[in-house]
Length: 241
Image 1 (cartoon, helix red, strand yellow):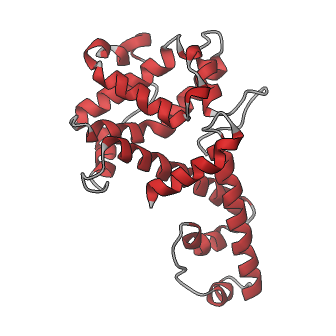
Image 2 (image 1 turned 60 degrees about the vertical axis):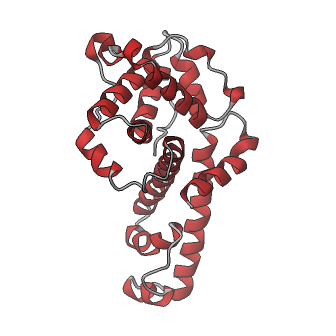
């Protein structure tokens, strides 16, 4: 998952990562924000590319933005009540890109420390498979944000299934979690792994339920108010429809 378990009671919302990273004495906050950057560098890369930057420029400037984000001391002034974390991140990156000349050395701060290793060749391989250019940079960012978040939820559920000895069952039921049709019927799946059809149906129901739980947990980390979770999930699903 994108959010690693909290340590010493450290809060795990994305906003709290930003706010604690704004405190130069809080190393846990900075480390948490670095992990957050690892999760979200690609949506930002796609955002920069769709704004017209070439692959090298996009890679360099996103790297600079992330370094700047981590090392800035005014992050403590960020106001979660002003909106959702993804909106904050997109606006902050947009502002950074529009003032790129002022920040051209940002990636070299801290003795050249790079918070995220961006392989532009891998990133470009992903980018060329994005939808056609009728999507604006903003909409593409939202789409990639949503898809990557859903991917992390699915990966967490896969890890849980594997730890329970249900890796094979998960693989066969995974399509329904992604909104697709199963390759085989419940009966055929059961026969292949020596389970009854009813047991497979029960497992599918439990996977769906756990998927929804994990989705709410993950989305909950991106909002300041738990009451915003349902609306954020609706926006997320709309972004990938």
